[in-house]
Every structure is written in C-alpha cells, then in structure tokens.
Image (tube, rainbow, N blue to C red; front, side, top):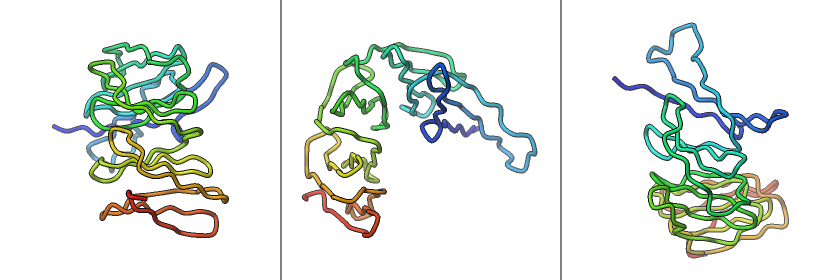
Length: 187
C-alpha cells in the first residue's frame, strides 16, 4: 500500500502578511477521482523532503522542524547560524542551508556542519543524477562543487543565467538569455 505525497513550496511557498506557508498533498491512488487532494498546511520560510516519509521546514525563528507525513513535528533542531533564509535538498538526512553569503551542508542526525562554501545570492541548487556534484546557481554565477561542498569551478556570465541541468554523462548544461552552454565538473 503506497501513497504518493507532494510537498509544494517556493514556487510552492506563498507569502502572506504573517510570512510563508507550505502545503503537503497526498495524491490519490486513482488519478481519475474527481475530488482534489486535501492539503495539510503549515508556516515556514522553506520546506524540503529529507527522507521518504519526513520533510524539513525552516521556520522564522531559525529552527529546522522535522515533520512526518501527517504534518506533525517529530524533531526540532536549531539552525547553526541565525541568518538562514532558505533550505535545499542534499540527500537523505542532510540539508543545504543558505545563510548570508554562504551555503552550509548540515547533517540532521549529528547536528554538525559537514561543509561550507562561500557563494552569494544562491537561488537554485541542481544536483547531478548520482548526487556527486552540485551546481549552485545565482543570478550571474554558477558554482560547481562536490557532495561535500568542495569547490570545483566557478562560472561567471555577464548576462543573467536562466537555468541549468546535469546530463547523464556528468556535464552541466546551462542557458543564458542568448546561449546554451556547458561546463565540465573539472571546469
């Protein structure tokens, strides 16, 4: 008996007078059902899955709340810095935290920082298919790093970077307003 859940945030996250909210949807087993799924809502700056049946929420008090699929808090963890404003997926049991002008790899079990990389203005995080490499995308820069946040290469464009994706052979393909370009993890 499998149930599919969808966590909607960022494109998902809605701003209102009190802050941001997230919605957790349980998708029906039979997609032909006419009724829409019931949403479970909560407040938080960002939300992301950290395991098959757990997700993390960064709240406005700089706590990371680990929640189950019933939207009940199972664990509270204080963020390592008081200036975190976003969280990103980084594999089971870890999170990437955006704090000031750096990205921090944080282990949720040991509550320790595993890696840190100075990268201002990160808006998107794109992982390679095997989770060995990560591309940290900001408005004009892409920073390539390993899973442990060891710097591999920095790409700077004068024109805004629109998107990036890893192909199956480990090459990062990215687009600007006028071009489609590529970069190898070796730079």
